[in-house]
Figure 1 (spheres, helix red, strand yellow):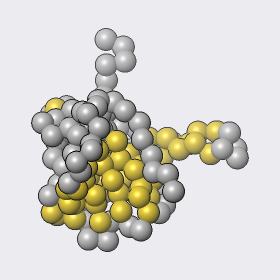
Figure 2: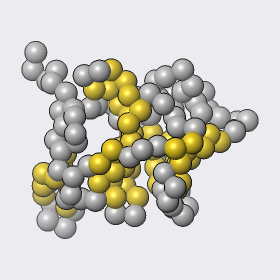
Figure 3: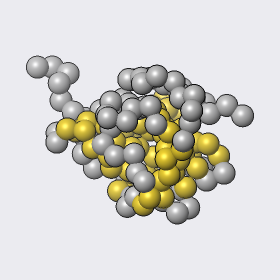
Length: 136
């Protein structure tokens, strides 16, 4: 059926030119993944591909290609429909999605490529397919 193909192509919007340009494609088609821009690099986590949910972590410096990153520490695992944002100071924050532990917060140290799970007593209830960003 039309629209059911899992795509791997990627585009970048240039607000000054008011135009899209195609950049390097992801290694495999994926949807419902989390993505953020951190210090000039694009980071992509998880999503759903041909094999189902996965927990891969990819990074790219546009317009270059993506590389799969070996994750250390307590990684978030397989999930989709989650959110990831740059927290500055060399950190990415990931939360939510569809998986068993969908309301836990994880922080990635970009320098060490190591995840840690953050304890939070007031975490919002589990969410699916939300948007988020860092303020401040």
